[in-house]
Image 1 (cartoon, rainbow, N blue to C red):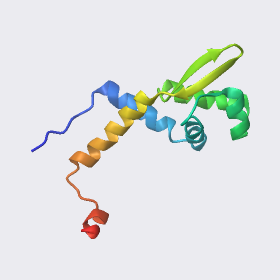
Image 2: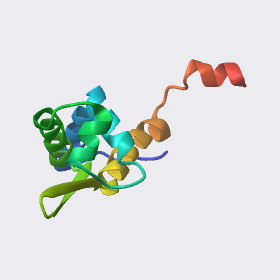
Image 3: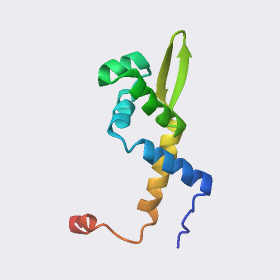
Image 4: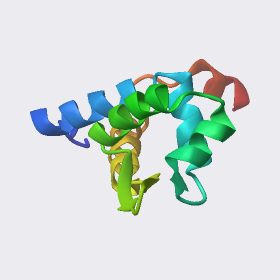
Length: 111
């Protein structure tokens, strides 16, 4: 029988912060824009049609959750994904799939 890996408190807090950050549609749109390349705040504001102050708030939440990183350059700050936190969230969710004693009904129907 496999043993279930229990996350420590710090890992759980990291996951909670990550999932909270991903719970807002605007923040998910930011993540989608940053999927392929870094972007400056001005370009994100334009693409998402939001004010810089509103976007700055959401970028701070994403940064504090470890999902994005900031790189200042001159007058602008460029943002990109920090994939290490995405790996943490992915591993957290995979534990449910790997160790769940319950087989989803849709998997039973496919058999």
